Image: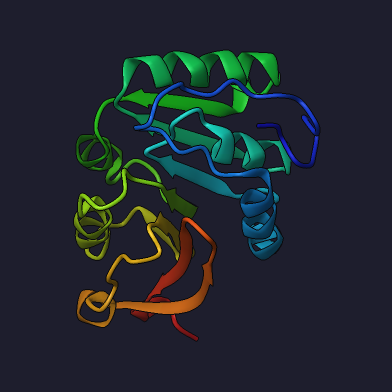
Length: 187
């Protein structure tokens, strides 16, 4: 895995070994950032369930002002720090060590984010729990976007009830990206 574009372009990133972590492939990451690119320069980026940190690092490399990484697994936390150091992007990054729910509560009222990306473990319902929290949260900026990486079979039928509008969806062989805005952000 590597950084696709920007100041850290082509730099290799270390990843966590094991089946619990599914690094986003370079091709999928490139598609994601082609869609997000107009929003990235100068943005505040939140990378939930960060894994190796490759998505947040890609955002920083492409010009995000800051990125906050949230990761619960100790091995992954260490890799995020190593990858940030290696890519020389550490000065614009914050790592919150802990679970996403606690981190969101900690960040509430302190920051807002232009882009919130989450890639929770598949098929555990964590994306639904996180979206349930974010629907009444001040963390997404008024014109912010939330991107969920999930299994292609994940049911998102509750989005309207939770107050989200799906503005785009990309389905890949082993995952999907769902792009959301809060209803009050419409228009």
